[in-house]
Image (cartoon, rainbow, N blue to C red; front, side, top):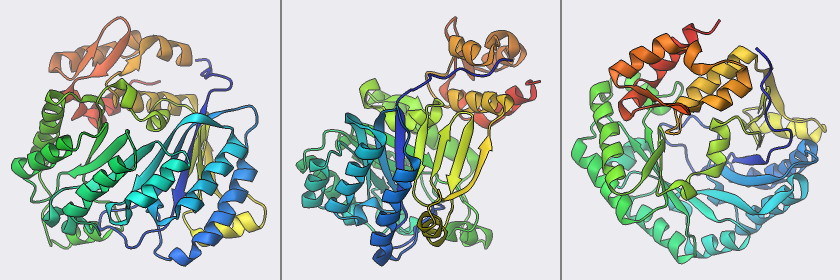
Length: 387
């Protein structure tokens, strides 16, 4: 096989990790600390990391500020990040600029100020409109605050608002999940992300599960909730464009997140952030102290990096491509890997098609909604065929 041939200078995405929270949610495995007094030191280091990471000859067309709780930063501090991104990464004035918001820290005034600094997309971590479920997850906000945060975003002039929801909680029923989906639709967001609850090691929720404090929802019941979201949101006009993501139409898909799924280059900044320019992927130290120490010494705060082999790239192309409703574009696969997808995997393709899990035409191969429930199994079988 020949090496993949990505565009020589495609637009890049920028991800900035804000590693601060008021408290840790019970399920969260993302790196964060609760020492907000360290924000100024972090921001000084972040600017220097941008200087060290500067890439010439490129333009950034997406900026995503995630965390942690980015809305703990003042609008002026957030504006500085935008200015640095423009200076060091040639941030397009029309870039998609997303800010993650916790409903407990969102005010109309702050959101107006964030918008004034160029942010044009809000991603609000609602997770649920059910106070009982929010307590179980360890969220600081209430259902009432979640509704107020969406109103604040609308009042601040944001026309592109996305909401995150979580399903698969231990005592979640079809009725309570439908109630969350109904409430979300009433708020008319442009984007919805519906994530299945996972029990990550070293989180309080995982420890409680292991100790028997509760029983996880069965796979069968969780699958039913997945189907409900697909059917319910589809009937409401949302397109299911990625296994966990829905948009009112293609215009409102997350431009930044699609970079992760389509091998587009992106730079990750801040502790624990990842970056990628195929075939190289890297990640920063999962420690603010180590991050600050490296930056102070004039070094990029890399924990490690890997050079993806051609086989690894093909495996990721299968997994990431089949996560999306657009699926794997056969011509792109041929161009990248000098291999005919249909011939390479025809035995498995025929079997999965007969199961009703996969469909293919002359242009692309994609999973059905039922097939998405078996994504890992499907990809594992395809990987076994790679020689």
